[in-house]
Length: 457
Image (tube, rainbow, N blue to C red):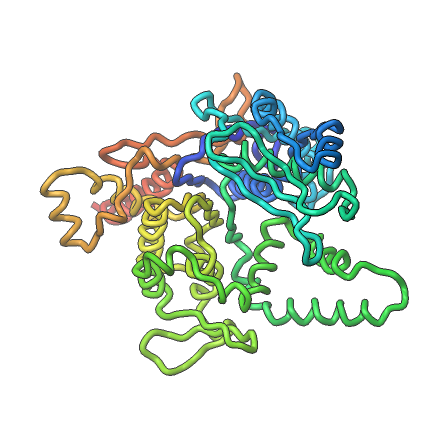
């Protein structure tokens, strides 16, 4: 799958192909976060952007006969056209995604292109029921390898209270899910603002409760939820999602991820990185319990690293599913270099477990540790000896084929025209990632220090 961008923030023109592990690195203000937020926003709301038309005659058949067969091949043939139109709709929505003026996105283009190798098919089975109150209204089902979606009423048509347009949207959503769902993973994002959200969690809850109380006492007809969501209009969509996630930790803590159920050692490794574990009480109080100590610390009392990794920790323990996309903006925030190395190994392990990872980073430690994982991932006796001696596990090693790296930089795109873009970094199967964005700075530092050491002779 390829993402194409034009005139998005500092980026004049760029494209990138997604890997199981995708990395964007580069200078500050080079467009890394713009590309990341745009991709997350699309994954978050693509279902609302795609326009799939359900014909009136199909609705009439459903309401008359109680059942209708939807030919999915008809929509497969139009799928790329539907996706292109959806991307155009999404481009128009970018001001809301970024919570910014429309003027900033007048020339912006955002496209998602499926490779020819990504064959559109509907092999998987599908099952869903729609409810109204306590009653089941209609079902949508598709058997494995079938190209028909069967929609069946489960009540008398006289009892259907939903407008036909609502039913159309539900059917269209099912068609989109069947055709496009496997291409667009469920995203979870940890934005660069995550540390602040952890600190002000109580204040966010207090502000919400106070607003709802004031609205409930108002005699005018207002929509409390609409007003509530207007609180976040000054924030980009990823930040809003982080705030909502942090606010709902008590509910989230009741769930259990596939990692917690099947791979508890991953959570143990994460606990070693943060030096303890997170706790949510029945009173919705959030604490950090340092390993080996009989104390509980609030987020204010905890280290910045503990706050920085809070939402990632809760995602791993409670929400993660195979096929998800974990997006982390600057995972190195507040982490010691050793823990930056360990977080790189954690990400590689997640990729091997089936969770895709997408990060932006300024960390040479993360990139070099990934290089080590690539270099060790070969069937040579001496490499196995090194891995064992240095504490690396085979489930952390990763293939160069699974990683895509892009450098956000200014480059000569046309004669005498330097523009910001994303340049693919070369990844050697033997030696890893060539991230020159770090190499230039490191070489400058080494050169200066050599002059200082040897300049007097």
